Length: 214
Image 1 (cartoon, rainbow, N blue to C red):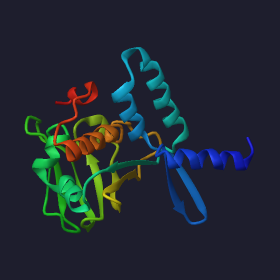
Image 2 (tube, one colour):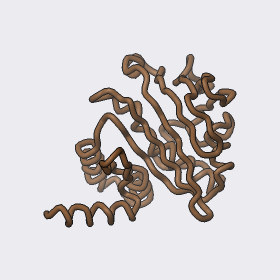
Image 3 (cartoon, rainbow, N blue to C red):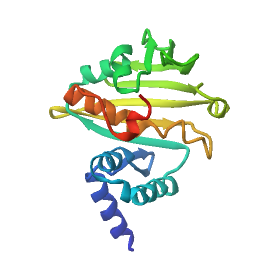
Image 4 (cartoon, rainbow, N blue to C red):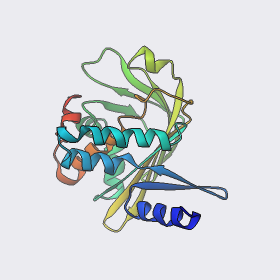
C-alpha cells in the first residue's frame, strides 16, 4: 500500500472508533481500541466464531505496543455522573464485579481496590492528578496474585470529554514493562463495557465473560 492509502485506511478506522490516536510531539500514534471489538463480540459472536475473536486478540497484541494500552468508549451520560461512577465505591462495585474503590480523591492520597470476599486487597496506588470531572491519573499496583505483584507499579489515566449528550472516556494504562502480564490490562474492555451498560441502562453486564467474575 502507498503511505496515502495507509493513512486513509487508519482515518476510517479512527472514525469508526476502532482506532484511538495520540499526538506525541510530531508523531501521531495509533492504538487498536479493543472496547468496541469486545462489544461486537459479546453481542454477535457465537461460540462457533471464538477462533475469529482469538485472531482479533492476537492482532491487537501484535500491532499495539505492550508499553502503553489505550481504551476508548462513548457513554451517554454527563461528565459529573461518569466521574461519580468511577470514584464512588458502591457504584464501582456494581459494574466492576463487586470490587469497590476507596479513597478521599485528593492529589497525593492513596486508593484501594477491594473485593469483600477476597483475602486482602486487589490493587492499590496513589492519586497523582485529581481534576473532577475531567481527569484522574493514578499509579496502579496489582495485588491479587504473586504473578502480578512482581510486575511492579504502572499508571492509569482516566480522561472524560463531553461530546454532545454523551462523554468520551479514554483510559490509558501505561508505564508497563515490555512483555507485562496481560492480567494487568486485559480486563479493561469488560470493565468499561460494564460501566457503559450500567450508566445507560441501570443494569449489570451479563455476558459470559462478565458473569465468570461475579
